[in-house]
Amino acid sequence: MNNTSPRLRVSLKVEHPSLDPNAISSALGLRPKWTKKAGDARQTPTGQLLIGVNQETYWLHEFDVSEQLDAEDGLVTVIDALQGRAAQIRDLVSSGAALDLS
Image (cartoon, rainbow, N blue to C red; front, side, top):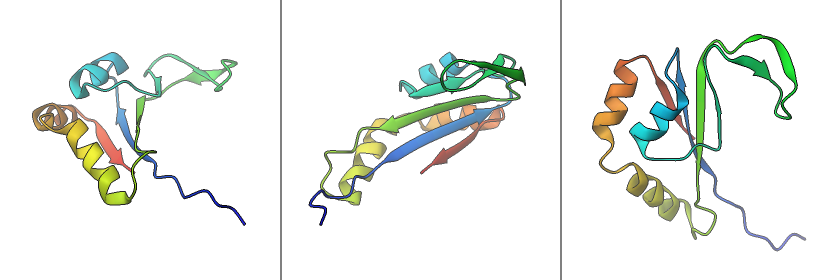
């Protein structure tokens, strides 16, 4: 029997047709776990080049909620991190970004 408790993971993914990933980081005040910039050569996670270029910018941040006791506490951590960024989020969306919190 496994005695470890389940881990809570929360991530924010941003997709944009052309925006530089650094601009997304700046707007949200968060560091990404990984990014892919629109127009850059496609690569595997190990850096091997693939045919073609990234069609969109992808940006992913994982919130550190591993120490939270329950989902509610974890979501409070996420809300606190995004607090005060509503205008920046609206600007990202109005410029073509799609945001996914999961």
